[in-house]
Image (tube, rainbow, N blue to C red):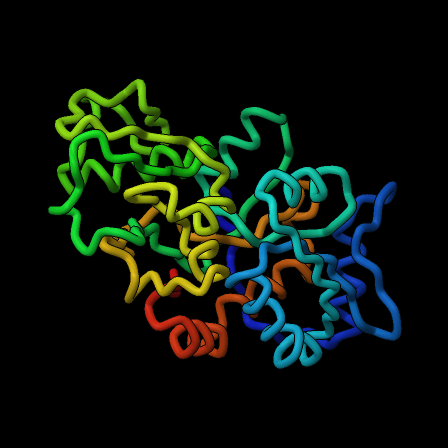
Length: 278
């Protein structure tokens, strides 16, 4: 992961815009400047990413000489494709293992900044109140994208529901890497956005925090098991094209996402379902 050094915001809006445009390539200028304000087009999934960005747009961006053009996306693969094709200037929806998989599979030249927040993965059920109630052959829905699939399997393994083979990295694990499945769990890989809507179809489902929030599930209160936030490698971060990683405007936006104002917003609005990563 490329680490972008942080700096104190001190540039005027006009100066910031000029620096941002200078940082972009001569053939393509993805950041638009008008009246001393730099507009940044950002794609994000609805919760909590769009809410966090909206807070920044409404309360912090103007003083930094920025205007945010926010574009909501609900499907994971789309924001990276839009960013790579130059349709947007940044996206905010993913953690590093997912980004690395996308880069390996698609050849994207994208660079992440530092983690902003963590959305703990949770195990949910409409019919069970404890993992002790899981019966033999129970159906379990897990995300079908590679990194969150492995993350879900690791969470189930940490609770003793299955055992992964030695030497398997959790982010790379698949059902084929299960060494022991004492309850003969029927693992079903599902689009992560669909898992909250189809929760009743499974005895258990492992659901990403953002999709749980969208479905009015409280990870902190409703999950039978919640992934620990301590030393968690799945922090979500702002991602930009590698050619634009030194843009002063994009770094200024990242600085705002790591401000104490944003930390307070996260802590006050998500009750532990979203945790600051800085």
